[in-house]
Length: 578
Image (tube, rainbow, N blue to C red; front, top):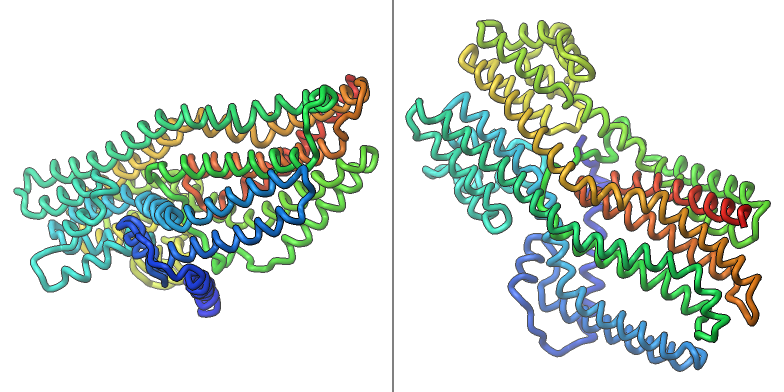
């Protein structure tokens, strides 16, 4: 599942183009600027092609361009809109200059957080390899064999330590100590276990795993407690209050309150979504790392790289939306078409990735049972090859099927354990589960070590069980927050929005004076509830699972489809009742 040369060149082209654009924008601000150490560190971590001074100057240059454009926009804008345009231009210019300083820092923090999600699994690999053979160099190399970014960083430390008395674990832990202190403590305990007496080694390794798991559990629990207040405030002032105000907008217009359609659009479709995005980003950046989803690339054989199904699905959903909204006012067509087309396109685009991920999770489901049964047989004197074949019928679900497939590969191709699981034709060749692949790699080590490694395999079953339990606990800690956000995004928010549009329409028809047009109000609020569905779903998914593009894309697609249905259910239901 390696990337093709074409995709690699395409992936490297965008950063080069962005770097060139920043250099050109920086020329618009020739004066020197001050930069902070955090910005320099962030750009270094991101492997950026520009330095901190160029980035800040580019931000000022862009702010200048926005300012000039704002002056021109104010000059040609109608008199009643000039203040609004000037305010928007000033806010955008200030936001651009601030983003140049803080954007890379936030992005680097998010990437570090995502990388540290693999910390418990990495420590587990080091502990398990140390149980088989008390050599810190081999434990470090085995822990670095993963495909995640954190493992790649450990590989670099192992490479630097080659030929020295060090293993690379201590320097690796020190490099990440600021971001995850339990990781440093855990890897230092693993390294010290190599020199510990045999009677103390098991205790030291258990303490390493406990330090990592307890640290992960405590950090997620603290975050869940801290996030409730800000998330509730974001929900109240960014969702509930704006939706509640929709119904009184026509009355406010009749009462003489200056309220224009452009102002309404600016508030509901620009201002409020911007507040939600900013608040959501603030929460996501502070999320501690925990358990990233399996990585699935477009090179995976079960993930087609064709784009036409996405286009066809979006177009089909758009046509269906036009037909379904034919009996209703003309303005209803637009939110239905946009929400339906975008939602269907996202679902079709990312559903293959979801299927591969679900399959990987299914393989992990009964991994604890598989390792325990194999480990017990190896401890009793059976070979790993025979233990895998004998245990396969006793393990439920997709995990048992994987063991049976590996046993079949062993028989047919006459290969060892590693090739049977991880080779080009192995049972896990197309299963992007780092947990399952690490277990297979340990079984390959056990096949070389023989009976003494059986206990390590049984211990790995315990560690996998601990990891899965901590992951479940972490999600439960956030369940109340993320559940509210998801339900509001997909159902309750759009339902209330549609209902309040119907009520506002009735109020407008029953009042004196010039009411606010229902079509304008419906389009503004319809756009708002669709943006609400996308933003809140992305936020809930990021809080629960980490910000993963494919998972967020799929869930946002489902939320948009649900939001369209809920919006029209509220509008039609209250309209009939009225």
